[in-house]
Structures are given as C-alpha cells and as structure tokens.
Image (cartoon, rainbow, N blue to C red; front, side, top):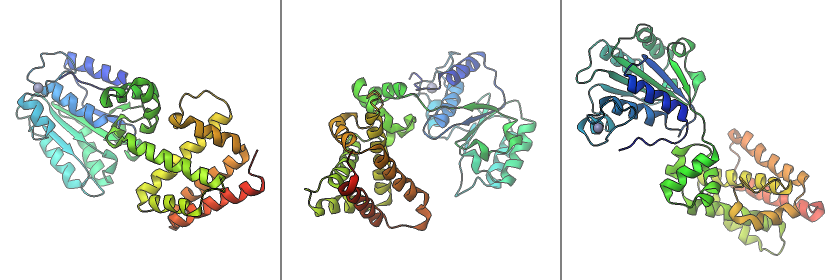
Length: 336
Ligand SMILES: [Zn+2]
C-alpha cells in the first residue's frame, strides 16, 4: 500500500529522507488543527520503520504484514499510544511510558511512543515526561501530537523538533475530495470549502446535508424578504433546525457562509470560492435586495448570539427574533 498523504508535503518529504537514512532525533512535536493527519503520519512512520516489506524505501509500508497490522490496531509491543483518560493524561499513564523507555525494545530497533492530545498532560505528567526527554534513550522516538501548541510547556517544546501542520489550500482539498468521493474536480472545488482546510473532516462530509442546509438558509432569508410566504413556512424551518444544538450550530454556520457569499457577489469579485456557487441565482437575488448596511446588521446579530452563548439564549427565540428583525426593516427601508 502506497503511503497516501494530502498536503504538508515538506513535512512528509522530511520524514521520507529520515527513513531512508534511518537516523531519528528523539522527539517530534506535531501541531496544527484537527483533521490534518498528524496522528496518521506518526502511525505511518511507525509502520514504515517496522514493515517487513519495506527494504529501506522511505515512507513505505505494505499494510498487510503482521507488523503493519499490529501497529494499526496498536497491539505492537514497541508502539505505545497514550490518549487522555477523561480530561487529562494522568501521571500514571506517563509513569508507565517512562518505565517502558528504560527497557530495550522487544521486537524492533526502535520503541515508538505517540502521545495524542499532548496538551492534556497536567503539570505533573508533563514534568515527569520532561525528565525522559532531557535524557532520551537512544532507541526511543517520541511523537507528541497537539492542536494547541500553547498547551505544551516551553521546556517540553524546546526538547522536540516542532512541525506545524498547515490547513490545506482549497485546490489541494478539492483534489483530495475528488479522489476520495469520486466527485468531478470542478464540483469538488466548491464542496472542498466546507472542509475548512482539514481533510480529516471528510468523515463528516455529506453532500445531501450540505444541500439541505444551503436550502434551509436560502429559504429562511427568502421568507424574510417576501411577504407572500405564509408565516407557518418559517415556523417549519425554525422548528426543524432547533431540535438539536448541533443542527442549530450548522444552520448558523451556513447562514454566515451565505451572508459572506452575498457580500462577495455584491462586491462583484469573482465567483471562485463561493460556498453557494451551486445556488448562484438565489444568492444574486439577495445581493440585489440587501444593501451593505443591512448585511452587516444581520451579521452582527449572528455574532452577538455567538458571543452570548453562555447566557443560554433560547435557540428558537433567537431565530424568530432574527426573522422579525430582517423582515421589519425590509418593510421600512431594507431595499437598496
Ligand atoms: Zn507491512
């Protein structure tokens, strides 16, 4: 199986060279937002080091041999994966790691320790790990993985080689999406925006869902701006998006995307990078009817809700409020 990684090529090349040389520094720190493949890369390196089919050819692993399979299910004796138990990585978990580091690897030349969500180490755990990182055994390689670099104490950071994983460019993501989901590249360019730079978000990628939220937000705004719609039609939308917090959150997120697209269309920038490219006509309709001031006012309403989330504002109340806000102003001076 050829190692397949999208984005962050420089980092991948660096490890390809290391694997060819077979010399490893003792500790790496992978940072960057979730979904960029940090953990996947660390595990792939562990496979490449131990794959029975890899004859010194860099970042290659077969995925089929017993070592590859045991690394995949984390039963390989010389691989230790540490994850938070509850909210923290506890001192006992790190003590266990430290103890293992004092032993020679059982079946490999290298013992590999992957600490996932390393920012979850409390101070005690971090200090305990630090002692090992200060005098690392020759046959151990550490991979610390984090989405929050500031959560790692500076003394640990200074003992690691730090690699910052960057979000993917939209073209890269579109290629990824087009390959994985068999979508034509031109269409994928638009869908890729919804992955927010992270290929890992593909697990939640659902075209039907995207269309459904696009349609809900578009219809919501259409009803606000058109008196011919009966009131119950807005009630249907509000009720359907308020059933669950996560549905509501997505609705708000799509509403932001929509407002942003209307602004882009209004400023007559190019149509590249529009979230609602497939619904361009409806977006243009709004761009012709809402002036900049109104668009900002509506955006501020949404920001305001986001900021005051802790107050536990009722979701449906907020949407009714938003509806009457957009609607009432329209009757007075909403048109451009
Ligand atoms: Zn293998």
